[in-house]
Image 1 (cartoon, rainbow, N blue to C red):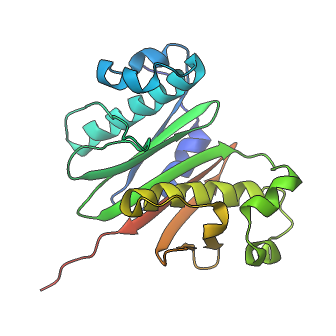
Image 2: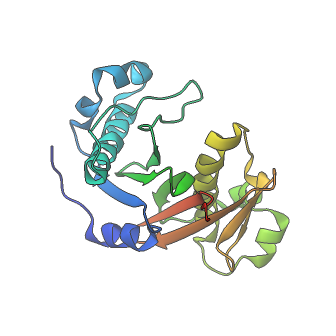
Length: 215
């Protein structure tokens, strides 16, 4: 099952990939819904075809990354909370908008958790800015019409990173982004690093590195 990729997006994803993190993408195509494996389908049987298609596309990407990591291609099931379950010894994340699906995968030896998100590079409705940005973030926002959308994407990636570790629901104001430091601080006190890039889409990778044992 093949489809064309966006060269600008591929370049952006490789640029934001942290060392040891594989990121890939796929332009969502008709028929991707049939890529859902039998054990994956039950989680989406109530979903509309559009969601099934995007979820299938994301899993095509994820299974390709598994092969690149040298592990058998396998199902990516969903937990009761809706988070994807990754092969033992690995952490990962998936996301999609209406046209493209992305996935990321890394070894648990290197990362405690990672998260990705993607959205069209389009301005948010002004009324949504206050819901997403903290007072400090609003004070630091520049003139770019895309700043609000970028904050949203980063915070979604951060949430996907910390939820598997803390199992705590977060509002957007529970995450504060520091663009200068390229880190986000979460209400519980965690600090999450992030990288982002813009093409026709805005994509972000958030991650927490695993402690390195020295001796």
